[in-house]
Image (tube, rainbow, N blue to C red; front, side, top):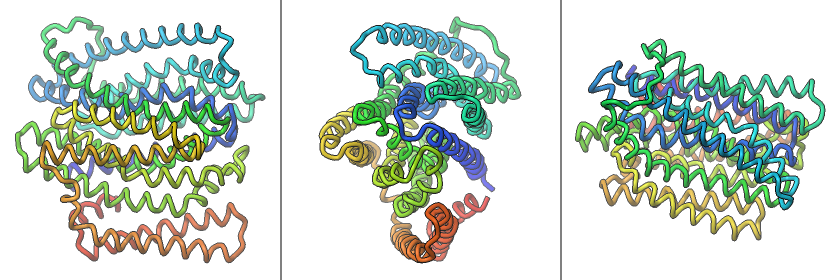
Length: 514
C-alpha cells in the first residue's frame, strides 16, 4: 500500500469519526434547544471562534505554514524546525491573547447601549464566553500543521474527536441537571472551552513524542527570513480565506435578522453538507496539498499536473454521488438524525429545501477548496484572494436580493450561486496561468460516473416508494430507507466504475475497502 493511500486512509478514518461525533454533538444541541432563539444565539456566538478554526485549522495558516516549516525541516532538520515552531507558537499566542482581550472589552462596551435587541445582546454575551476558544483552536492548528510536515496525520485529525466528545458529555450532563434554556446554553459555552483545552493537548503531546521541547523564545535570531517568508505567504492567504468565512458570517447575520430559527436551519443544512466535505474533500486535500507543494518545489510541471489530476479525480468520483444522495434522501436523513426532542417535524419540513440547495453546492465547494490549494502549492496566494473578493461581493448582493423574496431559502441559494462562481473563476485562472484544465483530468470517468449516478437516482427513488408502501411510522421508515438505499447505491456505483476500468479505480478500491 502506497504512503499516499495510507495517509488518506488515516485522515479519512479519523475524520469520519470526527464528523460523526460532531454530528452527534449537533443533534444533541438541536434536540435540547430546538430551532429556537437559544440555539440560533449559541450558533451565531460560536461562529467567530469557528471562523478562526476555518482560517487557521483548514485554511490560511496551514497553506502558509506548511511550505515554510517543510523547507526549514528539510534544510535544517528537526532541531531547527522545532526552534522555529517555539518562536512561532509563542508569538501567535500573544497575538491571539491581545485579540481576545480587546474583543472582550469591545463586547462589554457594546452591551451598554440600549439599541441592541434581546436577541443580539444574548448572542454577544455568549460570544464573550466563547472567545478563549479562539486561542485554543488556533494553537492546536499550528501544532497539527507541524505534525503533518513530520508525516503524522492521525493525531491532528483525531484532535477534533476529543473536542466533540468533551462537548457531548457537557450537553448530556446539562440536559439532565440544568433547568432553563439560557442556563443550558451558558453551560454549553463552558463545554466548548473545556473541549478546546483537550483539543490543543492532543497534538502537543504527539509533538513531544517527535522530540519537540517547549521553550519560551521570543527573539527570531537567525530565522528572521523564515518568519518574513511566512508572512509573505500568510498575508494574502488570510485575506482570501477570510473572505470565504465572511461569506458564512454574512449569511448567519442576515439569517439571525430574519427569524429566531433561521440560523439553526442554515447550520443544520451546512453541517450535513460538510459531512462528506470533511470526510472526503478535506482528507484528499490534506494529503495531496503537500504532494503538490513538493512537486512544484522540484520544478516538475508534469509531476505537478499528475498529482493535481489524481487528487481531483478521486474527489469528483466520491463527492458527486455523495451530493446526489444527500439531495434524494434529504428528508429521511433529517428525520433520522435531527427529529428528536424539541426539533419537530415542521422544523424538518422547513429544513429540507435548504439542505437540497446546500447539497447542490457540495461539488462546487469541493472544487473551490481543491483549486485554491493548487494555487497555494505554487505559492500563488494573490489569485485566490482576488477571486474571493469577487465572490464575497456576489454572495452579499445575491443574499440581500434573494432573502427579500425567499427568506432563509434565498440565503442558501445565494451561497449555491456564489460557490458556482467561485469554482468557475478559480478553474479559469488555473487554465490561464498554468494551463491546467480540471475537466481534462476526469475525461476517462465521465460516462461511467454518469451511468452510476442514474442508477443511484433510480434506486433511491424506487426504494423510497417501496418502503413507503409498508406504511411504517416516519422515523422507522426513514431509518430503513437510509440503511438499505445508501449501501446498495454505493456498492452498485463503484461496481459500475470498476467494470468500466475507471482511472485510479484500484487506488480508490483499496482506499474505500480499508
